[in-house]
Amino acid sequence: MAQPKRSQLTIRLVVVALWLALVIPGGIQLAAHRNYKETIVLGPGVTEVRKLSDWAPYIEGTTNDCNIYVLDSGVPGGTMLVIGGTHPEEPAGVLSAVTIVENVVPKVGKILVAVRANKSASTVTRPGDAYPQFYTIPTDFGDRKFRMGDRWSNPLDSWPDPEVYVHYPSGQMLAYMDVRNLNRTWPGRPDGMLTERTTRAFIDLINAENVDIFIDNHEAELEYSVISTIVAHQDAADIAAMASMMLSAMEFPMGMEYSPLLLHGLSHREVGDHTDALALEIEVPEPFLDRVRGITDEALLLEGKDEFVMRAGKAGLLYEKIDENGWHIDERVGRTNSTIKMIVEMYNEFYPDRQIQFEGLPTRDEVVAYGVGRYLLNPAQVGANRVVQD
Ligand SMILES: [Zn+2]
Image (cartoon, rainbow, N blue to C red; front, side, top):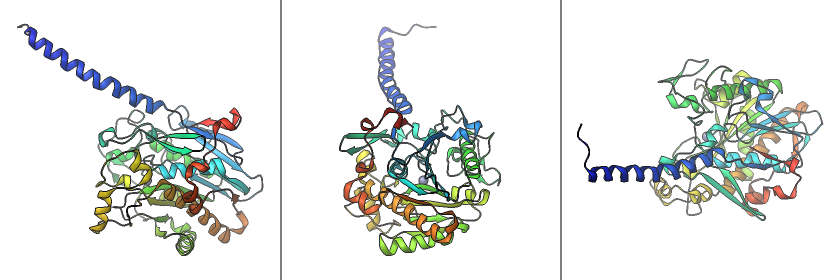
């Protein structure tokens, strides 16, 4: 075999050096994001922090053995489970869950919260789509930093994907990557892929704790029709319809729609079908998710301003309004919280025997007036036993 000439060898070495110069710093950044631990401060209402594996041993030792925050009033009543982070690229759902953990004080019944329902999906973003890795929320004591994530579980935790994802138990065929989508794997199974196991673990929790209301926090692109709405299982339709009417009359427009009967894998369908809980999903607008968006950075994620999405709106291509004010994270977290509060108020009307009452949840007007940072606690001002990582 002929030896490469010295000049060819030099070119090859330069190419390898350039490749390493790109791959090593990039890899370090990806690893730092994957291993970054979020700080959560236990608010005055948190009585216990448990692990999802407490209800489902088969999830122990996996990335998705997330914290379950328990806010127990000690007064007998109903139980609510709120999950954020089904899709970690929808930060308002995550931050809404954090504001519950850090602010809410239960008065009757019990509240359970998962901030990171699909923790694995929060350890990866979409570098190919130029997603930021983190976002920071300003507060009086400095920034609180959160992991931005993806829609799907991290392939490092769940691999390989099937050619076609066959949903269990319906047999419905779905796109291959949706075997890693926490809102396509309900009700799940204990011996399935990671995301199927995760949803099964939540089903086991819901059954064991006799959860009355289950709420799944989401955000949606403005190009998608399921937006600014509550999606309800038919058993929760009365509550959702009343909440939608009251919110639209008193606070902001909020729709209501039925969970499709034959579309399987979604939380509002399967939690309602496979448990006694009333299953609801909340969707608020997030321009960051729109395909026509411009620069995909932390500013867009938090401020929700984008001239290209606005142009799409002028062309009549969107299902929600947008102007130069955009859709700020405060507006989105506030709307999510107001919707949760109204759902619970309506639930209490329908189910007076299993009341859920609480105080301290910052609603839309408060979060917009003061910023969500006002409702994040300072980890330095509480004891070390009131700070956890998630
Ligand atoms: Zn979502």
